[in-house]
Amino acid sequence: MVANGTNRFYRSLLSCLAFFPLFVRVQGQICEDTCPPLNDMGVPIPSMCIGNATLGGDAAKIYKSCSGELASFKLSDFKGSGRVTVVANYYFGCNAGRREAGVYAHVAQRFYDDYGGKVMFVGSNKGAACSTWSTWMKNDAKQLYPGYAKPTNFPVVIDDADAVMRDLYFTPPFGHPSYVILDGDLEVRHKFIGPCCGRINWSDCTANKAKELDQTLTERVEEILAEQEETTTPSHSPSREVSFPTSRPTPTITNPPTSGCEVGSWSQWSPCSITCGGPDSGMKFKWRVVKDNRNHDGNETLPSCPDFVNTKPCTPLEATCGSTCTLETGASYTIKTLVEGLDGPSDVAFHPTPGYHLGTYAEGRSFPEGNLGDGEAWVLNGYNHSISIVSALGTPSQTTFSRRDRGYYHYMINATALSFNRVSDSGRDEDRDSFNYWAVCNDNPNTYLDAKEPNYFMGPTLYNSFPGANNTVNRLGEPCKEYEQCFFMHTDMLHEAPACIGIVHDPETNTAHGNVYWAFDTTGNRENGQLVRFDFQQPHGNMN
Image 1 (cartoon, one colour):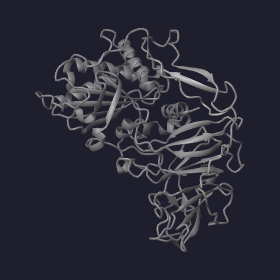
Image 2 (image 1 turned 45 degrees about the vertical axis):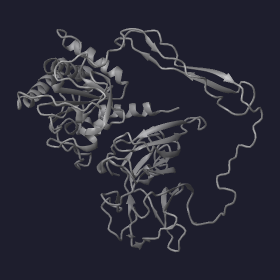
Image 3 (image 1 turned 180 degrees about the vertical axis):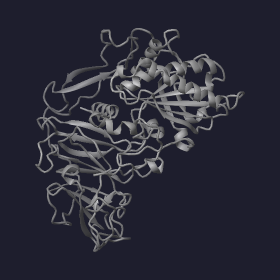
Image 4 (image 1 turned 90 degrees about the vertical axis):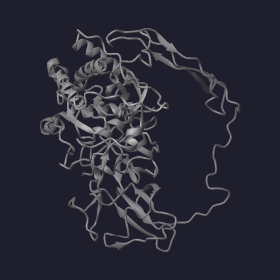
């Protein structure tokens, strides 16, 4: 079972509620236009602010849309004298965002009707199916503005599940719903929070309050348009996937059918799921694409579309299963003890950049440089909740050094597994790349060393192995001096997986920061677990 959707739902919900019991304390911060935004400790978080331009890979990245005039686009497509681009940041399930999204869709269509391709409106959707969100936006627009037609061409809505566009323009903890307006150079001219930000219930933000967004967007977009009253929309190379018009166009894609289910052809049957065993002990499957293109408002019950997967039992080729062991060490091997004195070692991982964390001198000790032998091994000690770092493994200079989290009783308690981000060539900008980060997961119901009742609010913990920037601190939580004992400071933590027995970093290069990990959680009967995809996205920063 992959529980990525569930975990993302909890994170989106908490983001929307802004931890309601503390809402009075943080409301001013999360619903202000302050840029760069401040984290919980009052530290500015690097972010795109007014005057910053969208450059390089950020402008060249291709986004695929689920709704609107364009099937795909790059932000660089929208460059040109006299052009304007608006980007909205929404979370499905957040009433404030739902309330404003209809206004946004109406304004987007109105500008399209008046200016064609000169003004672009993009919606970044997170937390639900992209088509569902875009349908709600358009339906709400019609309800809020009954004298106008339902939007069809704009906004262009993207599924921003990996938070790529969000982390480009709306770096947390900048609040939401939120908006940026870019000029023809893709420079941020305006960045602001929507009028419904901070409203918990749907009724808390009236239609008139939400419509304040209409006036704000209209005035600020027209202000930029007025800077150059006559302009020619720039041409683009023929290699673009979708050509963009200089006046009101004939749509290049069509809307889906208004009724019925779109059903593709069946694939071939898969091989049997097992290679040995008794009659009908395995399973085959075939699949097809099924799309529900029916328009409905979510209140009516429609019959299900046809199944997209079909299965049937199968008999393996071999009735008797032989040995299932596979040699991993080769035809011959030597066992040698390299490190002793560990305390309940549960996992080992090799640092992708040996010497990066310890340097040549730390806590009054010198460490090797140059010949680092077989690398630098990090060993998890499950019994004393620490990491033993074995430097210059297999050389005469080999030495072992132990370090743990300053709040080990929560962030590193009974840690069972460790994994590094080893992707050194992800292509991400340096300020968003998490190469050399690492994560542990814990098998503990969050008892704080048996000092509290378990609440199961546990999950993987993320660290940055760069020793500076408060990633390591002394016992008082202050930056370490080179002769002091140092502790790790976690940079983020996720939850909903308190009985984790394994974790591995995902080397994908699609997300903005590369902080995706897969963990195996055995919560429940500890026999039937679940595989959970955790995406730390942009870490909240080091704190204990």
